[in-house]
Length: 143
Image (tube, rainbow, N blue to C red):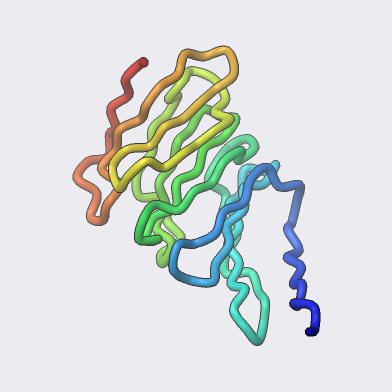
């Protein structure tokens, strides 16, 4: 039996996080420059779909929402952003979700995202993430 093919993805800078699209052969990476880079790894060619600046500082976490139409990202600038995968555009954002750098991001459902930050209390960010977005503001709640 032949070994499976290993395909390498060349990122522009040091990555902090990567995630895979739930239904398509896409991978997203958050890099130290604050960019979110998306790659198509479907055969035959491997290529960068887009690299866009989302965060003023490093992008530390990326996660696709269920369904894959929206990509959530969090950074050391304290920003939690929700971007359209197809349009490569930020749809809505939560500034200073913790008042400090966000290190962890987990998608719990289409409308519930949990974030974590060093030295901060755990906080849940509730946002209308399913297109079309209902509002540009998200609600945060300490736990």
